[in-house]
Length: 147
Image (cartoon, rainbow, N blue to C red; front, side, top):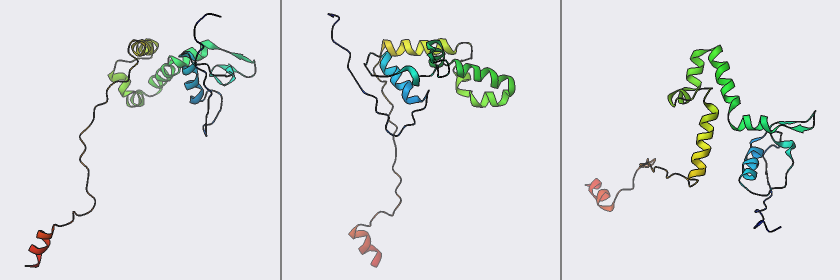
């Protein structure tokens, strides 16, 4: 065809993961497909596939990717129980994420990943190991104990 190199072909090995429609393993596979890998698949397992109608709704899958279901749950919880909403979504509230700007937040995150896909450096915490047993005494300490 002259279009360049063929995409890297990979096969999905789910191992012991449950393969129900909409499972996270298929979301990961969809991300790999969108990233350019060639993975033999059927759209029947993606979120948005309607088995009764036999059709796949890309719009429903897109809404899921951009967190519309989380925004809907935030609205529902805010209307039902304000205190539970504040407890459950405390980090969202602290970061200024509302149900209305949920999609914008995800788009900004995707843009930031595309701009610099390298993983960020993790901060290494200074950890002191706890000793569970007594430290062995030196020969001088043992001799000093006898006196």
